[in-house]
Length: 179
Image (cartoon, rainbow, N blue to C red; front, side):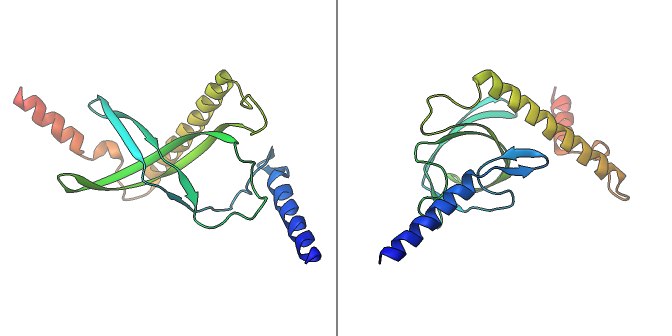
């Protein structure tokens, strides 16, 4: 029995050490889950609040508890109380089912902006530093989108978005005719 407990502690210490071990990705050091790993979570019933700011822009707030689909190995991951600040860019697609219901699905990416370790009072980056990091990440994301758009233009047989008649241009024409 003593050997089993000792072995279990060794495994737990190994998992914690692996998570906190410095890793390298594209020449940069990081800690945490290894790049390429996946996780699955379940979200409890949450609350999504939104309000319209412009004809095409809504602001929203979503709060919910998420739960790991499986069990975390004992002693793995960060200590309880650790916090993260993520920035999420996502596509949300919805379909109206009836007067009160929609299906909804989101796909996207999330960027880690900052973290606060459970045993620290301050975040690892100041608020100003977090804003600078977000700006840098959004610029990189914009550069990637522009590069993808250029690659789409080069594909034979595909029309560029500017040559297609979009729903928006049709609506604009109808609006102008109504005036």
